[in-house]
Image 1 (tube, rainbow, N blue to C red):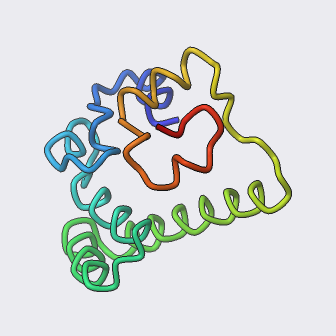
Image 2 (cartoon, helix red, strand yellow; image 1 turned 90 degrees about the vertical axis):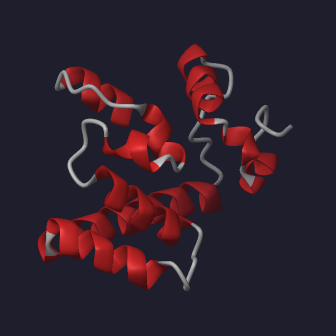
Length: 121
């Protein structure tokens, strides 16, 4: 979705920012490194890193951006949990675009890859 959004707005981004590369996250995305660090801490449920990431995002971007980022993250978690709980397949593992994104982001490195058909190593 980030790639499609960047293309439609003609914004130059580096998709590697999604995978934890802070320099890549900053390319073309305002507060990109702070947003990435906040998202990583949330996704990993890292209680040690989350307060610092939250504060860094608030300091850099302001409270409104922090609240929006938290809302987007919460909504994403909600959608994935609903899809998982009722068995909706949300990824076509055979599509060319899906395969390219998984390769670009090395998604098989994540432990949860074992739960996705065609993605497990």
